[in-house]
Image (cartoon, rainbow, N blue to C red; front, side):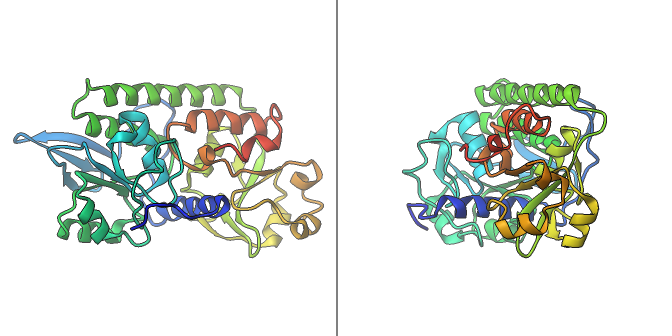
Length: 327
């Protein structure tokens, strides 16, 4: 356990990308529904025999502790959500990759690969927030260590709505609490952004390639948040048949599928790739964006604005540079 991130900004962004991509691997994917439409949430809070528990769609039931005043967060997205819904003061530890909002600098940092069980037990949080798939192998060990946990997921915009509502109720310990009301307001903001983006999307959206690593070429596919955001914008992920949230992709396939846009999430596209891909429509038209902004890569309270900004860039209303640099 450390008390300072000690990471370069590029490393932080890269690690966030890895966390988000791996969080989707092997997870059951619900069919995306329309914003605001009827859809069963992946988890909900139940009250049984005077106790609260979270029931998941796979039948898992996780008891909640009597108090959730002291929270340890293992992902930047969850840290931002806790701070937005209940305040930074509720956090007693965060991951080394958490850099937003201000006020996290004083907090201890806990390893997330693997989870620092001893460090978490020493901090004695009321609950540890982690990812349902990425930390699946650590959940049993957390339980044996006597550390209460809640594993969440935000691999799609629908998932994010579920997570926001669930956290609002868990952190506020009731539907009428301040965190629950802030959660409801955030869900409405997200739904409003989705509706506006949907209404402004053209009939024939652009084909987009999302590059996680340029050389060797790895891309983002279905099951990643950014893939779902592209679909919400009316765009088409040209690696939509990848069959997983991220993986290798051949340059031959890239050239054959001729994406209208290329988004890079780790580093800007190197000159060598620009030369080799010089005839790709995205390169010809200058539609290559370094999509590195934290709010674009993290499912959290800044996602509604990031979604609308992404739609504006793809529609030509904002320059490609609008997708990078903002933290």
